[in-house]
Structures are given as C-alpha cells and as structure tokens.
Image 1 (tube, chains in turn green, cyan):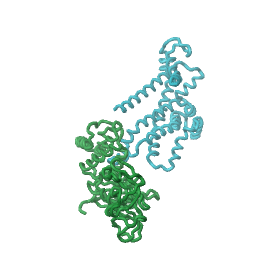
Image 2 (spheres, chains in turn cyan, red; image 1 turned 60 degrees about the horizontal axis):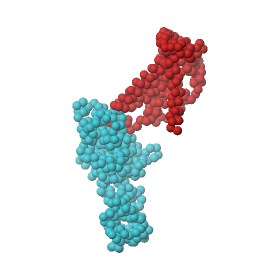
Image 3 (cartoon, chains in turn brown, yellow; image 1 turned 90 degrees about the horizontal axis):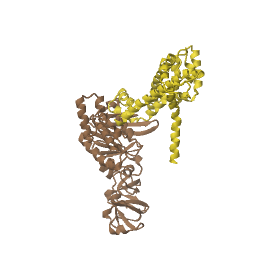
Image 4 (cartoon, helix red, strand yellow; image 1 turned 120 degrees about the vertical axis):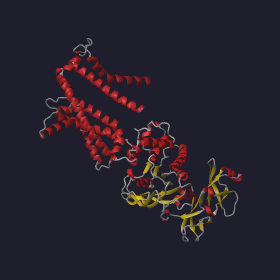
Length: 369
Length: 256
C-alpha cells in the first residue's frame, strides 16, 4: 500500500480487571474517511475510541497515526481532537476563546489565530456571536462551537462521541447533513461513534459494527445493510426477519414447516448445519393469492405507519414481518382483515444465509475502501 | 391560607433581623443603659476607636482568622482536588478523618489541643490559636470545595488535554477559574468560623493573644458597654460590604 492510513490499530485490546471490554482487533481507517463505529451501549466502542485518543492505554496492541506508532505519545501531542458527548465547552470562556484555546496553548501568532478562529466559526456558521458564553447558546449551537474547537487546529483525525445524542430529532437530522458537509469541506478523517444505525448509514463511508467487544463487520453502508455477515449485524441495522433453518444440501436451506426457501448461500456451510436466513421486510412481497414460490400465511397483525403498512404474517411455524409501502397496497390486500389468508414471497437474492451463532463468524480485518 | 403563610414569613424575618437592628439602633443611643433610649450620639464610636485593648483583640481575631482560613482553604483545596480527581486508596477513610472534627464536640477538641500543646511544651499564643482554628475550619473548607469539584464535568480537563494543554495549563486556564468561586466561599466561611469562635480560643489563646469574642464574653461579668454595640454595627456593615462586593462580582459574571 503506497498511501498510509490515518489510523491503524494492530491487535489492540482492553480489559478492565478480568473484564474484557475490547477483544483484540485490527482496523485501518483511511485518510479523509468518514468512519463510524456502531454498536449498542456497552459494546466497547467508546473504549476503543478512547484508546485512539490516548485517554485509555490498551492492554495490548498498538495504535498508529499516519503510519507512526503513538503508543508512547501522550494525548496532547497526538494529532487528533475529540468531540465530547457533553461537548465539554469551557463554561467560563466565550465562544471565541473556546475555539481559540488550542491555538493559544500552541502559542499561535495573534493575526493567524484570529484568522483561523473566524474561519472555524464560519465553517460551523456561528460568526454572529463570538463573545457569548456557552450557557447562552442552544444545544445545537454548543455543538457547533465544540466542532469548531475540534477542527480549528487542523488535526488529521476528529473523533466524535455520540455528538448528536443530546439534540432533538429534527435537529439531529439537520446536523447529520451538516457534519457530512463539514467533513468534506475540511478534509479531515472523522471517526464517529454512535449507537444510532440511521446516523451511521446516512453519513459514513464505512461502518464498523461492534457487539460485546468485537468488531463483527466493517463495510460500506449499503453492504452492511444488504449483505450483513452475522445475525447481530442483520438485526441491529434496520429490521430483519431471521428465520431458523437447516442446510439440506450444499446450496439449499430448509425451514421447518415451509420446506426449501429462496436464499443465496455464500458461507460454505456443511449439510445439516443450523443456520438463519435473513430477509429484510421490505424485500418481501405480500399478495392475496398464491404466486410462484410463495408461502401461505395468515395475517396476525397489521400496523399503519403512514408511509407504509407493517404486516405480521404467520407461515408454518414462523412469524414474518413484511413491509408494504402505502401506495403499493392492492385494494384486495387492504380489505383483508387480521386473520386473512395471504401469500409471502421473496427473491433468492434477498435471502442471506448466516451462521446461527455469531461466535463462529470469522474475525475481521478492515482495510480502507 | 396564602396570607397566613405570608405573615408567617414576615414573622420569621422579623425574628432573624430584630437583634441586628437593635444593635445598630442602640449603638447610637445616648443612654448608657441599653433599654432606655434617651437620644442620638456617636459617642460610643469614638470610645471604641480609643479603646486600644479592645482594638488589639480585634486585630488578633483578624490575624488568626486570615491565617487559619488561608491554611484551611489551601489544604482543603488540595484534599478535595485529589479526592475528586484521583483514585485514592482508602478514600472513605481520608474523607471520614477530615470530617470528624465537625462531629466531635468543640469542647473535646479544645481540651485535647491544650493537652497536646502543653505536653510538647508549646506556649499558647497566636500560633496555637491558628492551629486550633485550622482544626475546626479545615472540614468546612474541604466540604465546600469538594462540592464544587464533584460538580465539574471530568471531560473538561480531558478536552483541555486533547487540545494540547499540559496539566499545569489545564489547571490554570480551565480548572482553577471554574473553582475560584468555591475557593472564595471556603475562605470566607473559614474566616467567619474562626472569627466568631469562643470555645477553641478559650483553650488555645495565651497572654496577649485574646481574641475579640473572648474579650466580649469576659466583659459579660463587668457588664456590656454600648461601645460593643458600636463594634457590632461596624462588623455588620463590614459583612454587608463583603456580601455586596461578592454579589456584584457574581452579577457581573452572570451579565457578562
């Protein structure tokens, strides 16, 4: 590889006492990449991030920034900044002084400092009140100040710890696009830690999905969504039907009560292995009469969500969730009551065969896309 | 019902402030007998400023109060800072040990201090007074500052470190400015505690180091003079000025 990556983790691991928080993992994050670490709370994502910043010392393994090992470099000398979940703005300093903090510490010349602070404030669109105190700002504005403060020194990497968590729904959506825009504008590697799959899918170039201290999959948003490699990834990102099945031959899967189901087999599972077939609810088709390869079922519940209907259908011994966009519901289907007879089908490409148990999934090494 | 509550509140305020108002009023009373008001005079104030013995005790109290408060605030700051920021082993023990003087009756502390001082052959005087007052003000100074430090977001110092600040710069530019109000509060609380103390002073003062409260207390036997009312009025005035100055600073900070 000719170009060094912005961040490279080698066999990095962390345990607190006997509690293994981050299992040994390798990870590479490219320059100018928007990289998300996605996982539920307690999965080790924050610890992983704090090892990159240097706030936590890894139990083993090493961290490289821009091709250089920084294991012995203290946080303040690492070429990265962090955006804290609580923003951690200095309450006694004005917006301007908060943003100027790093430049003052590094003894930047006055004219240069002023220019760069104004530039950073312009980037986050907060030029209007540099003299206000953080307590006089709204949550969204505080976050912008924190972001300006993090990028003013032009670090190679900015780490963001659930930065949108404290904002309301509408502001979150706006900020997602803003963050992405700013990241492109300043050309800095963003490492974005979140438990919100939507945030990760919207903004990221690549996503690492973590669970219980392990990185399960590293891939782009579409691949993560369309081709999850494990049960956890399939169910954590979006909603997914996970149907218990058995390999009846090298390339066919059978579900008890339904028989063979359409699915793409990629793992090389031995015949007789317990697996799950993952099918996204929106990839399934619901009809009021049998079609080729469809499975008969009964509507056990249906819920109107505005832009779509969610049907729960009982087929064989399995309960399936099917999503139908409101506009596409046929008149015949719409009149069917709960308990009505329906048929469910999905294309072979929509069904993915995954190991029944996540602990058997292969360990992963991410490399820049 | 609301009116009853309102009247009750007024009554409480009357109860709190009548003694203070009485001191101020009687300090201008021409009569030497306090319950008879015979006319206005500033006579007692000039008496006060010529009473060298009384002024000497005032000076002793101020010196002892300032010294004790400075030491207690400093030690309290360091204690609170380390207990709040570091994983100190035996933390509960330290905390308990510092706070115990708050619970132990002052009279017991006074007796023990005197015993210790005399057993090591230490003459009672300003130094022993200061030491005694540190014992009782240290828990207060520590408690006040611990509250402020616990309320400080730990990610603030991480943020400063992350932005390139050394430990010292983080302390000077971020932590100390945020803790300054609590340091001031700890100092004032320690000073007033020391300034008004009688019990500990009784045991730790020596010849020539009588504090103001001791002097006033002992003059009970010979009878309180209106001069003391004048002194009391001046102290109330001084307190009001301090409160006003602190208040103005706080208001400025809020408005800034």
